[in-house]
Amino acid sequence: MTKPKLVKHVINRNWCKGCGICAAFCPQNVLELDGQDKAAAARPESCIGCKLCELRCPDLAIEILTGE
Image (cartoon, rainbow, N blue to C red; front, side, top):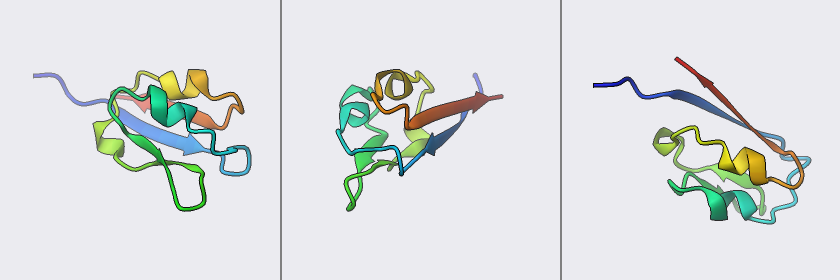
């Protein structure tokens, strides 16, 4: 059995405009907009580290850090 990836979501809330693109592209529904319409990792344990949110963010507000 493989170990789960360690993933950290770094979200720059000052850069995030709350467009929701990151949440729409997340295959595991990890991200959602919070009460201030900013991206937040609501279910980080479900993240598979695909980085689609990071790649699709038009504001470069998301960075996904993966490790062993």
